[in-house]
Length: 299
Image (cartoon, rainbow, N blue to C red):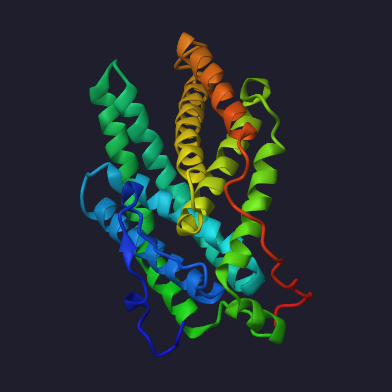
């Protein structure tokens, strides 16, 4: 991305689920420019949704901000070959801290929405969690996260500078896309073929890895011709819905709010069917020639 161009002018967002701006990437876009566009899109949503949370009682703010933060960390991991480990690690750690803080609010909102008992006391506790989290985010200057990341990328400080890295930075992003999709798919498959056979912790990890696979595929969705991607995406979204339900039920059980239920058994069965169907599908992406390997060292 030319350093003289404003970062905010470098991306044309398109509609996407949860109002997360996903740029239209061309297969021939350079890896560096593609990363910049993804960073801009995620930062715009983080900024906007943090403002929603800090200034209103709209429940969508924490959830949408967390989705954008997860997408951002997925992008940082995918483009690790061109990023300095120290700087990228610091950004990732800050994003995870913000993600966890907003997670407390999100969990409280979800439980309140599903609770049918004494809501008055629960509403007070939920508002108190929101108040404390807002104060903590203001005290830690969380609103500076997105502008700081944009500045870090715009200055080039987060990018590796050695000759080989510069070659990778300028390479078409389609070369990287197939490789990171292959890695994410292998990781998802490593969890086994039956969600019902996984422990709750393992199933939670499986859910996170499936989110990573989905976000990566959405980053590069303009690259996938044919019908394979829409069908894969539809099945993946439904599988994530079932895994999310299982996660909520497991959390409620751990906190003594519920026991095993027919809904849990039904979700496990449906998750197994969806995962079996996904595993049987041929990958809709192609693995192109490898991006040049990175030597040790930061620069």
